[in-house]
Amino acid sequence: MKYPFEPFKIMMVEPIKILSEKERIEILKRYDENVLKIPGKYITIDLLTDSGVNALSVNQYAKSLLSDISFSGNESYEKFKKKIKEIFGKKHVFAVHQGRASEKILSELFNKGDTVISNTFFLTTKANFEYRGIKCIDLPHKENKNFYSEYPFKGDIDVDELKEILKRESEKIKAVIFTLTNNLAGGHPVSLENVKEVKEILKDKLIIFDACRIFENAYLYKIRTKSNKSVKEIVKEYSKLADIIYMSTKKDAISLIGGFITFDDDKLVENIKKKVLLYEGILDHGGITGKDFEIITQGFDEGLDEIYLRYRVEQVAYLGERLNKIGVPVMKPYGGHMLYIDTKKFVNLEPIEFSKILYIKGGIRAAPVGELVEMGKRNYLRIAIPRRMYTQSHLDYVVEIFEKIRKEFG
Image (cartoon, rainbow, N blue to C red; front, side, top):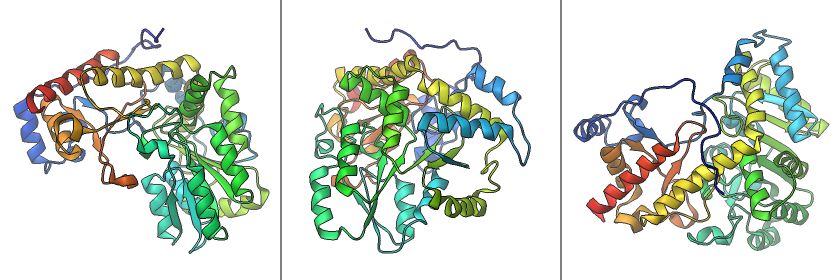
């Protein structure tokens, strides 16, 4: 049975401004025909991102009121570090203000001319590494190129391609970065088996996780392999395979800001410490407030809750199934946080044009990502669902607007 309702009570609300179609046309003109520029107050349903736009819980707010705001010797920071060590099992933890800061710091572990491989680099990851002259190679699984394939782990790295590249430039390859889940390749999970196989092939190379959605990844692995292990146990299994883990806590930790880097290698400590001090501030906060440390620490527990994770994944699948039933081409299988839609096949509109129509007809904002995804120059609309923000009726409204567009433009 699918989860029948949102597993939380709504105790505080923010009103949604409902504009007329005529008003939205004027607003779109005012902001250069670019939905990304439109202020949030003019958006009805915002599906642009799931990053840092989460609804906080009563417990997160309560913990934030009891936070330590000390500049040094911060107890909220110590709780944060303890929780990360408990979940990921690594010895060293450094806080940063968000995941993108981790990428800058980690890129400086490598030299110009080095090669780093990924299942798919996120945009800012790639930008930070390429800025330092590091070659970045995306190796998404071959099934990822098949829009309707039900292959359960489209987030995997293509091992055959990896072996071929290894033959040509083994000495230059220094690391592989797994994005969990694979955000710019449809939000699909990476399997434990794929990470193990890549680790065995690369042997002496660094294994790095961009773990911002590792809880959703682990839950999808659990249900797709019918594992009897808990999500916490599965996360620990993934973590053991990584040399370095970094995370933006704006996603699976259900918070608004924050991030960290964690690892075991004592030799890396001084190097990372210097860069955190240089870019992020003193080590006892890394650019994060005591209030946010408390919110994140509580968010880890709530993000790992399997009732919540079931609801989260099934909410995405619910929207995917409803859109699929009215003829919207949605990438299969459904991911943990987002959907890719082929708008060209749906109503013969490029995603950037479709995003404008979607706003005009329903006040809905979604991201055209074709120019961002280089694999085969695919051009899709990305729908990302914020955590605990929208109910089933909001998603039903999204479906109604898609159906309205199909009738008018199809």
